[in-house]
Image (cartoon, rainbow, N blue to C red; front, side, top):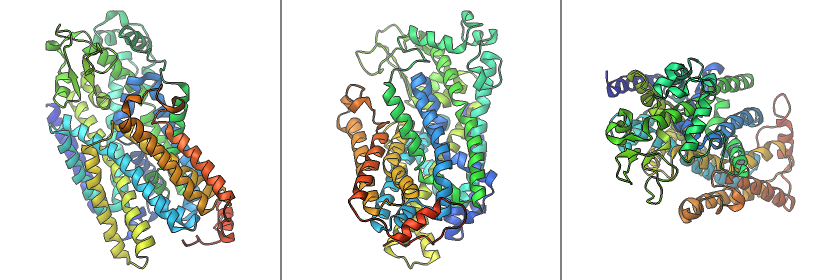
Amino acid sequence: MSILTWTWILTGLSFALYIYIAYASRAKTTGDFYVAEKSVPPFMNGMATGADWMSAASFISMAGLISFLGRDGSYYLMGWTGGYVLLAMLFGPYLRKYGKFTIPQFIGDRYYSNTARVIALVCAIFVSFTYVAGQMRGVGVVFSRFMDVSINTGVIIGMALVFFYATLGGMKGITYTQVAQYVVLITAYLIPAIFVSMNFTGNPIPQIGYGSMVTAEGAALLNDPSTQGKYLLDILNTLNKDLGFAAYTTGQRPMIDVFFITFSLMIGTAGLPHILIRFFTVPKMRDARSSAGWALIFIALLYTTAPAVAVFARTNFIKTVNNVEYVNAPSWFKNWEKTGLVGWKDKNGDGIMQLRPGKWDDPKSANEVKIDQDIMVLASPEIAKLPNWTVGLIGAGGLAAALSTAAGLLLVISAAISHDLMKGIVKPGMSDKEELWWARGGAGVAVVIAGLFGIYPPGFVAQVVAFAFGLAAASFFPAILMGIFNKKMNKEGAIAGMIVGIIFTAGYIWWFKYGNPAANNPKGWWLGISPEGIGTVGAALNFVVSYVVSKVTAEPPAEIQDLVGSLRYPGKLEAPAASSH
């Protein structure tokens, strides 16, 4: 069967499963809608967390970034993985004990201020919409290639599906849908990687295969007998250097920027609201810790495979495209060319595709090949000439990854509107049923806005997500950390820090991406720090401003200080969570 047929079958079956699960576990109360009535088993919650965590950026874009950037792309891998550990160990258990399942709710109560709650609410919505833009873009990319529709049509289809199961099932429906989505996405990611690793090196474990020697069969696939018996990474280094790129295993970014991006991603991860809420969907605190451990295992399955996929895809890509006559271009190139995500310009009129450093649409660059980083994972089975069913499977996996995270983010936005704004501030006395309607309405509006971001994205998938992490790092991380570990931090300090952190970070990103994009290079950056890494500086400013302001303003009330003190010790809280003033 054709790739299109396989994709329709596999995607159709997976979509039918998601819709059935959402209907069967539809929310009847706000407890169902927000935290699934705290009834999800730890193993299942760990799997759902893994799906929530592994977004379109992880599934579609991360390996693509690593394949293009080599060593420099590893900061996404290190930042996101380290960030999850930080979140699970540093924040999750304390927030679960505090009993507030949204960040604005925690910040509003901990800092005894509705103003702080509203600022946190705005930050949560801002970060979540920035993040969800990448997911909807990923949905559009997958649909455009595998369903033979435009990217915009793909985004609209994705909107419709997420709208159905996010508004109907809430957290309960989303959780069990995400369990199914995890199974789909991890199967889709691992099977092609295992196939390619076997074909190239004879090793079925991709994590080991990409550091192994190429077999005779692998050399035949590369159409280069001289590669037999050589290490795959050495071959890729040579290919890159021969074409004018940096060696794959070395980096070009300033080391300070690599550090700042990694740290920004790490602490931004710890402030992501759609992951923190996962600690409330299990029955007990012990279950929360257990589910975090399971999630780390499920996440590691994909994250340790990504570097291998990147190496296989990059090597195959160069070998099948560079110095090949366009009339003899491989079928995968012609298929993806229809989407506009790959292309060729014959600048020298010789009819041969030449891959070189530089932008393909720059007349001064010798590069003639356009390749969108977001397609490397999706195209890798076709590039490697794997069976059509594996190509359809990876399409279904990409959709599962994007839709699972999009649903989690939309629930955060919905909760921010219904629980934190309407119930918490505007109309505290509203009924449970009325709040549920507000939650569903908020989710519906959020889906529409997210779709518009997917149609008009501010960058490629992983880049957009990096901005979201930077904004979370600059706004939430310091406020939550000091809220848990500093009894003396007051509302004035937290409010001032959040405002300064997110304004500085968002302003820096805007300036280099839209205000003065010509300066978006290491020479134009402040101290060599890119927009992707500026969240670290924003967080540092947040800490400094918070500390200084808290020292020159009144201390928190005694009951708040006692509450924070008891938060870090075993047993129940000594006092109930304080209400906002």
